[in-house]
Amino acid sequence: MSKYPNIQSKIKNELKQYGLTSNTSLTQEILDQLIYVDCVTKEVLRFAPIAAGIVREAICDDIIDGIEINKGDVFLIAIQNLHKNSNYWKIDPERFIPERFLNEDKNPPRYAYLPFGGGHRTCIGQDLALLELKTAITRLMQRITIEDPGKEANNSGGFIQRVTCYPKHMAVRITID
Image 1 (cartoon, one colour):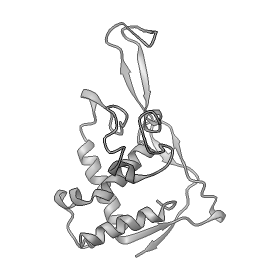
Image 2: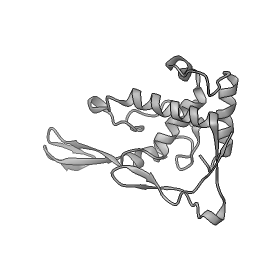
Image 3: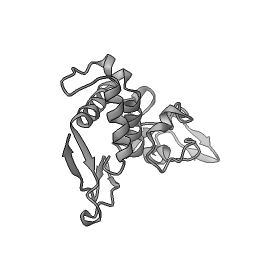
């Protein structure tokens, strides 16, 4: 968020629009009204997915695009490749743009957006995770502003993708509002 002060401003404006303060009890109904916070939450999960991939096993022999698949073959579906594939995302998939979920990319193709997996093995905790992430973003943006400390901090940003995703070269300046 330190790289995107305009996005923080939009979140803070949405919170003000609904009259939310740090003393407001956040309910599911209130969080459901926060459309921009929802877009930011989805974009965070698209841009830097929590998991590197999803493992699946072929349940029968098949041929896909001329490639022979045998029953029992194991596949790793690289989530990042789907989330940043221009075949699936109309708005530049390499850029962090929460508004994509208001426009052309509001409803991406099935299995192009997999922050919690897909199919019958979708994470059973996804609704709780989304609620917690939206709550965290809302509460943080009510209380602080995250700033890029500048070149002296070597804040090149990005993240390292292993089994899970974590930031690299990250330094921020936090101002309490």
